[in-house]
Amino acid sequence: MVITDVFVIGTGTSNRHVRSLADDVEHRLRELGDRPVRREGADYGRWVLLDYGDFVIHLFDAETREFYDLERLWADAPRVEFTEPAATSEA
Image (tube, rainbow, N blue to C red; front, side, top):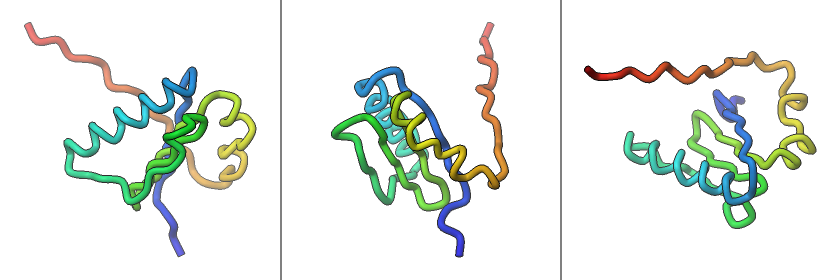
């Protein structure tokens, strides 16, 4: 049984930053026609979970990410490193 295909894990610098990241992710994915099945933790901003079915986004503050250490829990899963594409300039 597959629960989800991909976990995306990110870290904010403060509770406010974590909530802001979650809001931005949700806004940008909504523009693409995706809405989360579930959103949890936004009230506190220590760990916000955005569940989109095929992928789940976990946004943490640094202390909470270190405590729960999802990378260790899912150590056997393959990792895909994300590199932000270089910005293109229009001349």
